[in-house]
Structure formats: structure tokens, C-alpha cells
Amino acid sequence: MASTTAQALTYTAAQAARVAFYGAHYLAARVMARQIFSDIGEPPHPLPSLASTLAAMRDLFVQDWKNIEAGLYPMPVDIASEFRLALGSTRFLVDAPRVVARNKRKAHDEVRTRANGLPHYYRQNFHFQTDGYLSDRSARLYDFQVEALFAGTADAMRRRAWVPVTQFLNRTRVKKPVLLDIGAGTGGFLSFVKSVRPELRAIALDLSEPYLARARQTLRKHRNVEFVVAPAEATPLPNASIDAAISIFLFHELPPKVRTEVAKEITRVLKPGGIFVLADTLQYGDAPAFDGLLDVFPSLVHEPYYSSYARADLDGLFGAAGLKRTGTDIAYLTKIAVFEKPKRNRRQELRN
View 1 (cartoon, helix red, strand yellow):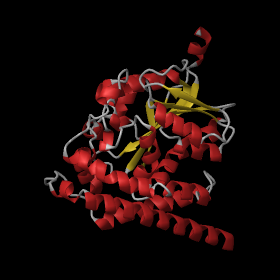
View 2 (cartoon, helix red, strand yellow):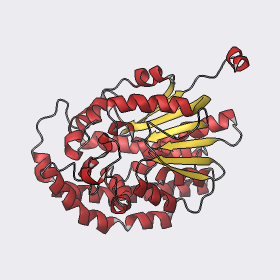
View 3 (cartoon, one colour):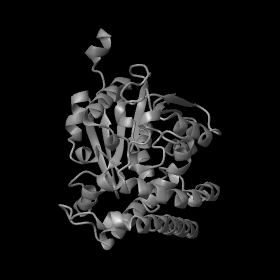
View 4 (cartoon, rainbow, N blue to C red):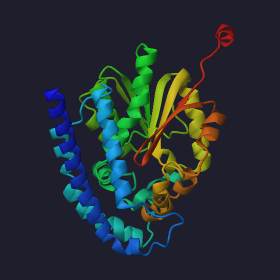
């Protein structure tokens, strides 16, 4: 009991420190962008109060601790890793004024001329960020930027996305399972996964070569990780080769037509009975207190496809591709939806 209490206190202190540290960076960036915030008109929905925001953050950490107590993953206190990430503070603060200046002049297509060969929707500076997703500099900034944007809660939200995956693996007891991370970015999520299940074979798929290069560095100590540079709508993976697939904060950056193509591709590569976990932004009505954020977010950070995603019919999107929703979870600003590819019936198995 004393040990559990000590662990709980350690967890609470670590998360409080993260929120304070990254929250301070968020506030610093917001001060730099105060004119942009002041120019925002009245959104259709009210912005969340501080009380509702803090309550939702508290609920996120309470559930995170419950998952740790349930043995779904170990306590996330890695001092060395946290220190390495925190070293990005100076880079973040130096780059933030560039992002603000880019926002003021609506310069979201600076990477277009050097993005030849990439899909049209990808050739832009999402979030007004320096170099878009197309440089090592951007890859080195990205993880810190995300934690600052979410005031230190991003890791806890991502960990929630692992819960349905580990429950699926425990339930099905698949031999030599394969996990596909679609839009793996710099490899942060897969690094967490491999720390929990080092034997799991993982495939990191992303369209950004610099980001995957960063992921290779992040995951260099882990075995059974494959890196694939490809668009999510045209993966070079075989049919029915994946047991579980996951996508974290990718779909809101895809145009509607591309989302449809990606959903079909996910169905194609999943084995019958396999699952797909979609972890992405809240949609309207998921947490009404935050609907105002969904109103203003796209213009603040240049997310051209965000508004359409926030209203998208996910059941219709994935149902048309052949997947059925089996669960939903709300983790602060993230919605986690679980979809399953139906198993083949006996007649289909005999026919094949």
C-alpha cells in the first residue's frame, strides 16, 4: 500500500511538472500571438472555461493512472527521456516568432516548391510550422511543439490509444502480431509501444522522410521495427498482413476524398478480425464544452481540412470501407474510436 501511494505521488508530481513546464511554453507562444488571438471573431460556440479545461485534464490523468494500476502499461516516468525532450525549449522559443510571423502573413505554402512528387494536400505548412513536415529541423521541433500545444497532456492522450490495442492483443493471443502505425511521425508512440511490448513487430509508415529518419533514431535500440515511406492512401503492404493498425492525429490533416481512400487501404491491409484504432481530435458534440475550440483551431494553426473532419461521419466513412465501430473513448481533447474488420465465416474460408 505504501509503495502504491508513493508511486501515485510520483506520477502526480511528474504530470504536474509536465503541465507546468509545457503550459508555460504554450502561454509564451500565445503571448507572442496575442494579436492573432485578439483578431478572432466571436465563435459559434463559447470557448471552454478554465475550470472545464482543468477538470478535463484532471480526468485524463485520473484514467491514465487507473490504466497504470490495471497493468496496461508501466508508469511513464523516464527522467532521461523527459530531459532530452525538455532540451528542445530553446529551439521552440526561437522558432515560435517565425511561426507567428508566418501566421500573420498567412504563409502556409512555403514548402510547395520543394515538395515535388508529394501529394498536393501535403505540400503546405500545416500549423504554419517551419518547413512543414519536410526537414530535419521540423522533425527536431515537432515533439516539443505538440507537448506545448497541449500543455503537457499529449503523451497521456496517446497512451490512451494504446489501451484498445493491448486489450485486443491480450484477448486474441495472436502469434507474432504486427502493429502498423499510420503517420508514425518521429516515432514517439512506437517508442512507448516497444517499451511495453518489445517483442511486438511494428511498422512505422509516414510520408515524411525527415520524420522517419528521426523515428529511426528514436527507435534505434528496438528490434522488429520496419520503416516505410509512403502515403497512407497507397501503402506498399500486402493484403491482410496487419493485425492492428493505429493512426494518431493524421485524419484531420487529410482531405475528405483522401480519408475515404485511406479507410479502404486500412481495410485492405488488416487481417479479418483485426482492429483499427483512430485517435484524433474531438468532433462536434463529443465534449460540448470544447466545441468553441473546434471553431477557432483551424484558422489559428492552418488546418485546412480540420473543420470538415470535425463534422465527419466516422461510422459512415469506415463502414463504407468495411469496418465496424466497436468502441469509443474520450481522452481530454482526443477521441479514440475502435473499428474491427469482420472475421470470415466458415463458408468464405472454405471458398478461399
